[in-house]
Image 1 (cartoon, rainbow, N blue to C red):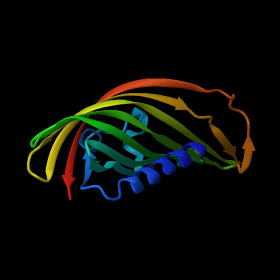
Image 2 (image 1 turned 60 degrees about the vertical axis):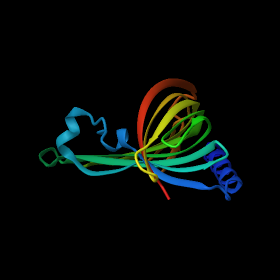
Image 3 (image 1 turned 180 degrees about the vertical axis):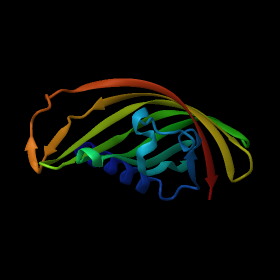
Image 4 (image 1 turned 135 degrees about the horizontal axis):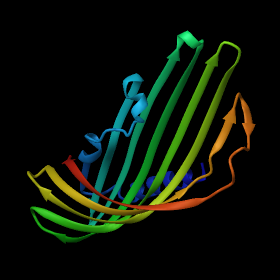
Length: 211
């Protein structure tokens, strides 16, 4: 919750600072738009609920500086129903992403620009597992919030005055949060108090529409 508050505060403060900016845009990450969720093979034929809201971006540019808030939402569920054995199991996973980027435009002309900056944000994950049997039933909820940050280098080419296509390279370090587990409506501490981090690089492709 603390990480979410920090990101929201930075987002609101930065948005207010650029209220008089002369360029605004909305955009989408095309790589994630066509990316499939990595489902476990044994569940592929049993998924009954799948929502995919890919990363959307807002862009504000002023005085060779840009700020880009971003968010996305994923959700999928699958269910195993073993009627002959009198039990069923249902699993749901939701991922909410909220972030922001600050960049300095290094090179700017009528048709393209290049920028260098930093990204930061949170990924909030929630999973629920329900087991319903003839003799008993059980529900387990797990929640975790990770914080990430890292540099980003991108370039943007204007197809028209209002439409641009861009690519961006990111190297992000994610600080993993602690799993909070609740089982059958009782708080449990069966997960070790561990913290860690992981790093990942990725290349993204953006489509932006300037308003």
